[in-house]
Length: 353
Image 1 (spheres, rainbow, N blue to C red):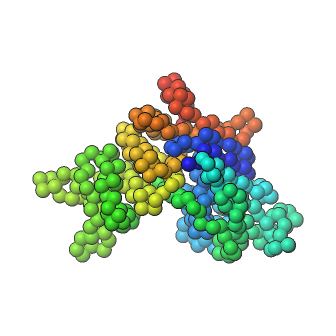
Image 2: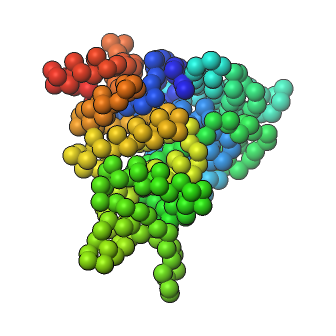
Image 3: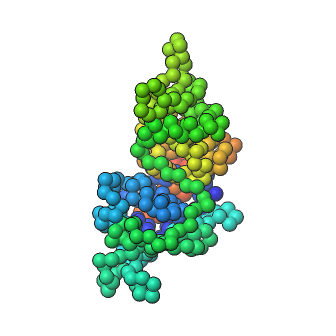
């Protein structure tokens, strides 16, 4: 489990240290203070080539109908990874953890190849910028070059696949058929009772889930037994509401992918505030049972309060709130609140979002 994150020259961060990290980390702060950027930094430290291709649309609204070869993506996304779009400065991301756990990544713009490479800037050939990304465990063990003039189409070498499985979830709901395939995989592994156990904390009527493809239907669907009607008719899980659908995807994806790091943007989106305590109880159980570290952004005071209440009921309080805020120098800094600080802030109705 990671205990410290350091970022420099990336997105909203000139230089920032976030520590100590906990098993569950809620990221709060005003708009444009870098909450989503913090998730992107953690993701980048683990990304292989496929992960980098996914990054522009992972949490942000991009030109999803434009291919990755488009100049649009270069100008509207990749250049903005650099703090204040200062392309001459490399960004650096470092994660440190218990024992020898570590991940690092750096990215810079250069032009040319081999001995002809030089930093991107006014004296460079700006028509052919190359984004150079290096990642690795305990240092920079491998490197990748991406021809940004054509998105990510040109590739040599590349980061080694991460030995840590990272999963990201946005506010966009998965297709019901995708959830069905996840539930089917869980049933094959004989772990469906575990999944139902997590979801039952949120929907107590739930008895079981089934993967079914009805006759003359094109796609499979997840059906739920909640004791509906005299014949206990199974109903499509999608009819239990957006919140249930989002949680089904969250738990099922984490279980199937054997997630170790879970990134969630805008956690409370689509969830009723009065259901947040049982949701956090279920998510906490998932994280502890499967040794998952969670990083989630939120704009909600109720979400922070619910996470605190749920964590307080456990034997080990494993929640931290990371509040991003402007410093006196005008840069973004992180204030990490532990249990005592969270309790004090909530009792005094102080701003923690």
